[in-house]
Image: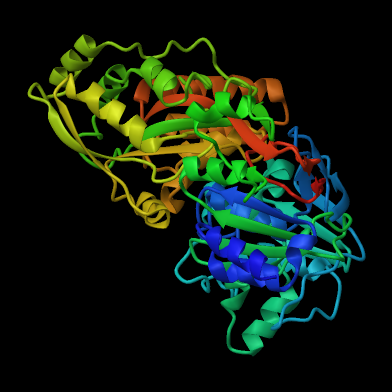
Length: 540
């Protein structure tokens, strides 16, 4: 026993002494315990309130279920908490038949007295939809960003309970991506009974801090910036996980994550450095999984701040950025150059658009035409964490800084701790900012509306704070059509406008990799860059 404890202490970096001592004391190493080296701390544990992938990995994937779900390797929509659904001929009424016998997690503060039912669906959506709902303004100053980014409050008219296991959504207008939207993380179902109990106890905010869901794993504890612990939920509606315990070891440095993987201190790691890919391919203890990413990495210009209110400046900086060198140096050629807001694997991609070439001379002339013949001074904020769309924000920023200097643009680089970085992006205090996106539902609207739509300016997802009426009219019209052909044409036109107005520099679409230890069985890469352990097992 002492040998196990000493080993745990040596492995404390990123996992935490207390957590490992607890594992040893409980004999959990003899059980099936998988350690996942994740890249960052979660913003929080309720996906209704946050928009980042670290939140989704840390909360909704292990903890929550939704009415519908996506197959891991595709964007096909399949039943989840809803066993089936039907849509009225006019596209305004969606009726969901709910699964019976679904259990909620329990905790020291909450012991569920009933199974999941329609009341939980109504609570989960009305909380986001109704400003007068008692839990709407509860969440410590947070807004329901994703819900608002998707314009859901303008889509859903009301949610009604037909009976305990039938829920009806009435829409204000037809919405082509509606079912796909319900498979996204912000649509996770919370427990109405848990909320009522906590409200009665005078601690209603607990539902956002201590998650209770119907997912495959149950929350145990969170040591900030170090470790999240889960245990298998025996009564999970889709079958108990094969893993007994799941540990997220928060390890921001990709090199440290790989060192832990090689030492078998973790069995799955997030987002390896491109420079380590060849080593992983030749590592006999590691299987390297790869998938084309449904993602985009970009620089957004805050068009509410000078000089980015000038389209010519934005176009000049596009021309001044050497994307080929960025792809080779940062992505190690593990991806492709971006010219649009959506990846080429997604339908409606406009391949006829000609990307801005790397042309410093033309960029400098355009800057002078914009009224800045002597250059400008700006701030460029770069990502503090590894993301699936960007493996090394700092290195990318240094390359861009050097490129822009050639046309007289002095860029001061800055960054912040991840949660502060996200907070600033939503507040609109930034000038130029490095960001990116991994698709959530396989629909182009998930990129266009969420990242460049006018509603997303208000909620903070549109970090460029760019609201163009012509672009907006096209993407809103596309939502109303049930014809994918018609929607594609509208989105193709919208991409022409975005390219001309240049609120971004689209940089790259990355090839995503997930290295796993050989003993990991059944892990599948997600089309949406999430890490799902519900069907994973461990061999010897």
